[in-house]
Image 1 (tube, one colour):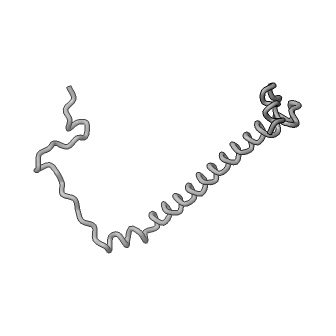
Image 2 (cartoon, helix red, strand yellow):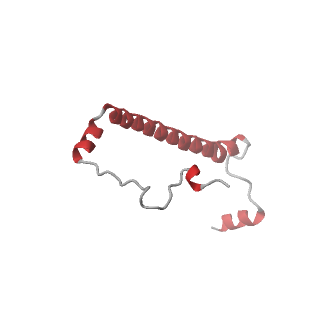
Image 3 (cartoon, helix red, strand yellow):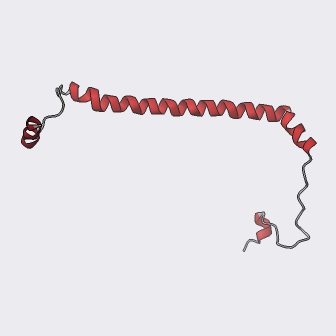
Length: 96
């Protein structure tokens, strides 16, 4: 059987747990102004714009497919004034 410490799980004893270090405001400011953080922020912005553009293109594609199926396809099949109606529908339409 594999022991939990080999899988990366820390034992529950208090002596093996490391306390978390507090981060000073100067360290936060230095991290924000570092070149790596700015590059990462720019990369995240570029990825966000590309994902948004992809989502917009997908929605436009869905819109064009719906227009083709519900507007252009019926007229292309010969139904220029809508689909054929049954007898009851014609009667109720003429009475209205």
